[in-house]
Image 1 (cartoon, helix red, strand yellow):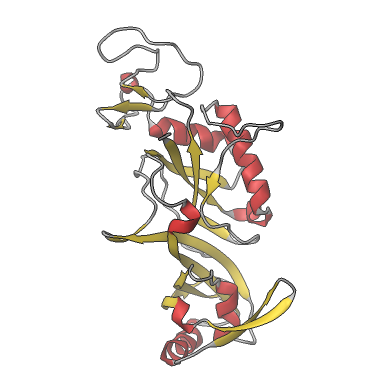
Image 2: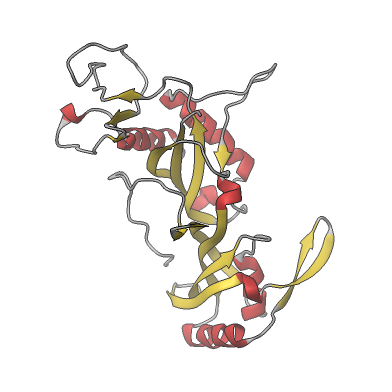
Length: 280
């Protein structure tokens, strides 16, 4: 089974206004620029095989986007240094492109103080970040064996932070308490041109006020992604009908398994930067 490079990236600032297809295009461009050995589809018009997590609505920010890149056979070199020399001193095929280096079946350690440490997942993450536009930044990268469900199918819920413009923290806390005490909360949304009513209360697993920005109260929520995705834009009218949603940011994509709730596995690299909460 082909190995896959799983990448976690953020999408913040003005670039939140580009759609999912444009994100896919700029990701392909960055992968080509970096020179990663990614597999392509066959046929008259081959395309890079990219597999994203849940699509992010246009206008939303995120610090927890995921994409998997299937690698061509033989793309991973075990214990290879930056000059194409094996750990035992024997020569290997030199590569101009960044090498995903593995040692003893695990990722190479990130050691910027020691150039001899060689390329690592951190190297790939930094290179991809440099190739992506402002507002998109790779925080981590790591290999997976390609087993299990797709990223989209694996995600069971998402973490969010969002603003309610013009609402103060105390009023927001009261609205949250009333929402959580309610047995049902029916909202309406437009789906394929039709207005659909549904009860979103069972889909709200966590909801709390976490602070204020200069625009209004900031709330944190964990919202179910199955049987359908629930978004903060559906919560705001139920919490504060006279107010609008401000900046909304996805903070996590959660999967579930034998070990409990977790994010799609990506080792934390030193390239990962602390993401600040929504603020003024």
